[in-house]
Length: 440
Image 1 (cartoon, rainbow, N blue to C red):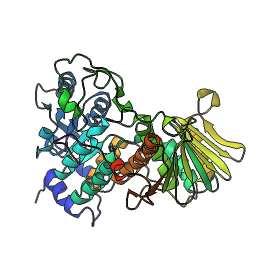
Image 2 (cartoon, helix red, strand yellow):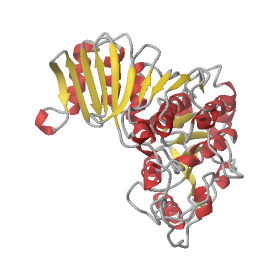
Image 3 (cartoon, rainbow, N blue to C red):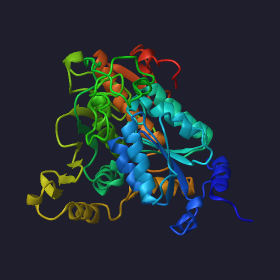
């Protein structure tokens, strides 16, 4: 009896939690009929999702729909898909993401909206039985992180967070060195990224036709339009809505979602988190200096520096995109930060692996491509490299750090219960006031 791809995935989701299995890649290979490929919808097709859309188009998928509140971006994405398939029509374009969510013929969605929309769309997609690729940070606040983890579990779906640094070898090798004691006992980690979020104070600008500004704001408070938040058309930069706490969390949740994620990986804390958050000495005036403290005494501090910097009793590992430095005591074992260093990034990481990880007891999840990893896990029903647990826990680290900046208070945290303890913090800081009818 022949079973369609969609029938298989539907039945598989019911047993995925208790009965892991692997479907050989050849089952859904390039020879698969277009009608049987993973069908996808893309929600929020600005600069980030344009890149993701192009990547998924060239893989074993079929894109059926795109969605954006900006007419120009929406129409351009639709044309991109139709041109790719050499068709005049076939890809639908929507203003409202719910039109994609309600479609039974769409298996998975790729979400790259502003952060304040991530969890609302993700949870709706999961409840509708769809697998999800959602950009980082996975959530806008801690409450949303908890709800996304619950929704994945309850609905037996696959979720990949767009924390794609884990699919780059320099970060994996760095964390394997730390986890296997190559720098001795880990003492502290320093992470480099920019400022915390701040309230939006942008002046009003004239509204332009072709943008559904009310839908763009969604659960956020109503405010007048400003092009900094949603530049019109197919701009080639990342808009600065991310600087404002109504929509994002500054660079703490932007680049911090990348680098704190790597710190979590190196600490082996993917299913946990810090137990204490120390404010910066300058209190609410500070833009650097908040420190996460873990139960084993290791600290993760927000500072200026290399990217992610692991300090141990016997050495140090520094890693950033395209950069890697491994030191034992004062001796540089391998290094690549620029061409003048000689060699290459690949040679630097391979040297470290050969000399210090040949017999490693701890091997971390190896992914060579973030989108491929998502698609393979949709087939196998295994958790991907940045699952909802990884993405939500890393986002919680970012949100805790921002709360220390916003309020200048020492916080004690229970990472198992995901709540403030010992009279510190305020439960209201875990969530936001959602503008009706939106909620998580």
